[in-house]
Amino acid sequence: MRIWKNWDEEERAVVIKVTGVCFLIAAVFVFIAILSYLFSWKQDASLLSDGGTMEKAANAAGSLGFRTGHFLVSELFGIGSLALLVILVAISVRLLSGKWQSSLARTGVIALFGAFLASLTFSYIGNLIGMDTVFDGGLGGRCGSFCTAWLTQTIGSIVTGLAILVLIIIFLILTSRKFSRWFSSLGSGERKKKKRKSSPEDKPEQVPTMQEDNADVSVTESSTDEAASPEDAAEGLLSDAITTEPVSEPITESPIESTLVEEKLERLHETANYDQEATGTEGNFEIITGDTLNTEVTEELKPINNRLDPPDGLPKYKFPTLDLLEAHSSGRREVSSEELTRNNNKIRAALANYKIQLNDVKAQVGPTVTLYKVYPAPGVKIADIKKLQEDIGMTLNARGVRVIQLSDCVGIEVANDYSSIVPLKALLNDNAFRESKAELPVAIGYTITQKVKVFDLADAPHLLVAGATKQGKSVGLNVIVSSLLYAKHPSELKFVFIDPKMVEFSSYAKLLKHYLAVLPDAGSEEDEMNRATVKNPKDAEKILRSLCIEMDERYELLSKAGVNNIKLYNSKYKERKLRPDHGHKFLPYIVVVVDEYADLTMTIGGAPEARAASRSITNSIIRLAQKGR
Image (cartoon, rainbow, N blue to C red; front, side):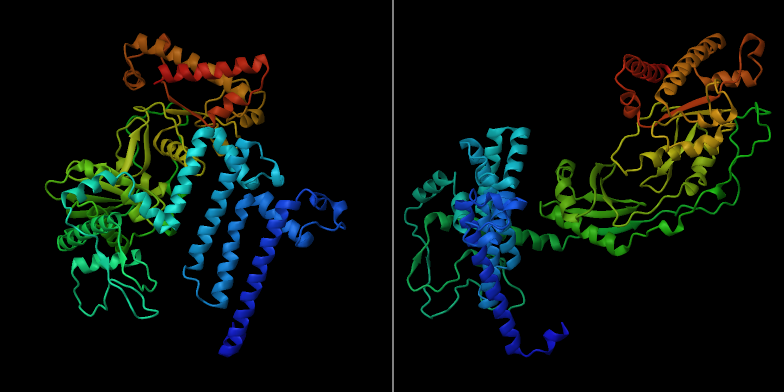
């Protein structure tokens, strides 16, 4: 860069011209290489092998030209590779003369898309006429052949042809103004004929002529007025639709073009007038912030008042303290007022495009999502806002947008630019968890209303945690387990961990003497520790069948006690209404956690014993899901 700055204007011009010539030579070389490859690819096929490198190439551009043509034609876009020459020519013309009208970026995108579209088209045609091996990659190259084969296998040959036709029409609309005008006039010929019959005296408008040489035709004047009328603004937006080359003869617009211009002017006038009206009706914007999650522990967790007195086993057990959990202070991200104001303005603008006016907007900030409460003006239908969810999401350019209906307004949930970490320590330190009356309380997260969400696992005994990779499934399971460990005494709760991956629940093996329920068939203490979490599918089958037997025995005890759930049974047992010598005992909750259920039933093998074990696992889980409470 320093060398370039030290050069004078003449030296820079020389370098630019030389670079332009190099690009022009490269364009000519590529053109000759591709064109010659189309006729000599069979003769030069031996050059691709190691033994044929010394042979003379039949390609007019030599061996390098053959390899270039083979890469572009055979490996990439086939005959459509000729469209790539436009990029080299455009760069060369821009460097040599600086008169390339379109931007290089737009030219490059159009050329690449055109090459790809041509590759699809020629590959599809080649497959139909049996020329899918010509040029060593088909008429459209291997890129087009692969895409066409995938589309044909997925949606069928006929639909693939229609899809390619639609892409061609879209490409022509984006690149050709004449084709766009002709296409937009299709289907409206009868209406325009009737319009002309109703007013036969109307004559086509004429565009005034320009006699000066090298003069650009424009429909906008130099704007010296500070406030322009909507008509002037609309005509200015249409200036790019009129040719910019000098005209020496009067040009008469066709009736179709005249009608199209009139319709565009009417729509632009309506939009301009509405924008002027909507600008002055902006309502209030309010930001609602709640209390931040507190991670400072002033007192230990309060004991839940449903324990045995004294506890059945482990009378000296001490609950874990919250100091064991991290506060994640560095993971908190504050949502700036600029972000909230920006989203508010974008929401108003997106709805204003559809003539939906708003009175007030309130932003309720959450750790990962902000809820914008939208209060529409009288007469606005809620359904009109809900159906614009995708349009609002595109306008906001956010990671996720959801439109919901609230009691008094419409809610628009928008993902924050930067999400905050919600620490488990803060959830368990909240009164919603500390003062919970639930049998199995679980602090699952932080709601949009800035409240800790606690649910009772006993009321939702069967959970299926699903989601894509890295979406937090294992984190959710660990939160559930940790909440129960902080809430329940070992005499009240037992876990069964089934982990085919052998890594997700291995850290819970240290709870063997306190919280884990295992089969009493271990040969030694070390063997018992290794089998604390079930890793083998055969062991999973045994423990699941054992749980079904335990479930049946518990139902018999509940029937004898005359109750229908464990909570009432344990209450009667603690009140000495159920005698142990009659077989009654305190029943702890048993929580079964299975990770990778699909892997558990699919990786056993193909032997008859393995298939029987797989059916046994499935049947046991079905029975537990149907009757387990």
